Image (cartoon, rainbow over all chains, first blue to last red; front, side, top):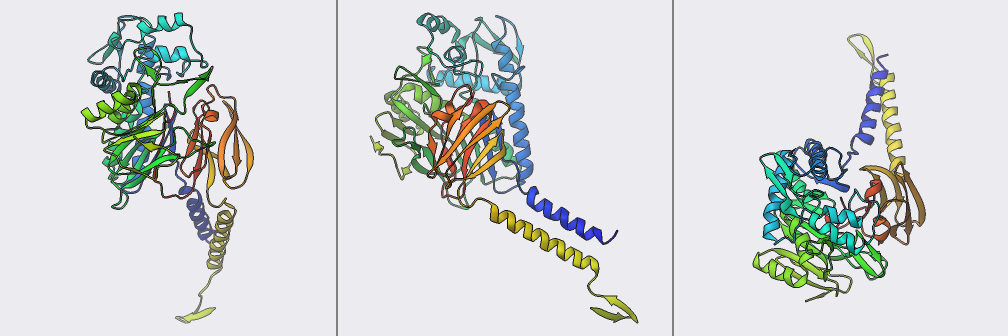
Length: 332
Length: 134
């Protein structure tokens, strides 16, 4: 029997080498793909803590997750008090802050409208609603209908719906970065559906980050430009993935709070670089809604680091240097 | 091989040693074969809910259909580019995204939990893109 021991050991060792090293790096969060590349620290433990965090957060704030805080408030009746968790409370506070800061361009209560147009998980398919339907949904898109007192969330308008889609990924990335750092990680990249956190740098050099081409000329989607970043988050908003076309009009998933309909903007891609990912996430959407002129003024007033790309294939940068610009885009 | 120690014969190489060596050599060979049959260079990987379910070489044309409980996605690899040409998902975002060709790029079909990603080595560490989520 003894002679089999070395053989079994060798077998175990070999199997461990083949399969043990293939760690699962990608998981889903709010239907986006999360990947963590952590180069130092207790990376394996950090990854499992990060995965657990995302799954807990999704259960708390996912609009289409049955039983989540958002699921319950969206189906609550007027005045009904819904007990919510700490993440919902923090996200609500951030929404309140940035709703004011962006003068309502970041709007977390558009879910009723986006569902009507077919963009939300609760909807069946894309469609242009009738003018009557569009008019009827407007009063439901009112963020001031929601009140948070302590851990109790309530609403004053029946049918008003909340949605943290424009902030949850950024908020999650900030939390993930903190979790990673608590496990001694000083280098790595957190990628949550295109929301990035670049932790530290790459052995003294900044990371090379590509920005996706929002309007590829040929059939293949390449990169608009490259940039070098370290120790920061970066988020891009665009209308190039989730949209539908009807009679030659492109309807994007980002909604204009003024019309409660898909926004008509001269911007096709907005990138915001900021050490706070929640802020970058919110502002990338808000600037997209503002349109080129107002976005430039807002970015200058608030000293933001941005890359804006317009439908006329022109770009504007502030606080971010880009290189290897491809696809025939010209600076403004 | 034998050696006399304290008047006793001691085997320097036992049967167990040979078995161990043979096992190590066998697994080294298996490892080599696995490494050799792996697609070289850029690879198109298909993930479902984070689990890798398929892998194709980027530089070998082909049309592949990936099926899951939720439905199917047809992945077309052609001339070093990859796109989703057909799917029965609810929003069709994966088909509208167009073709990708660069390492690190991915096409996401959120309703099916499918991600088609080009993997390999490149000088780019991360990609900023707007990805659909709800």
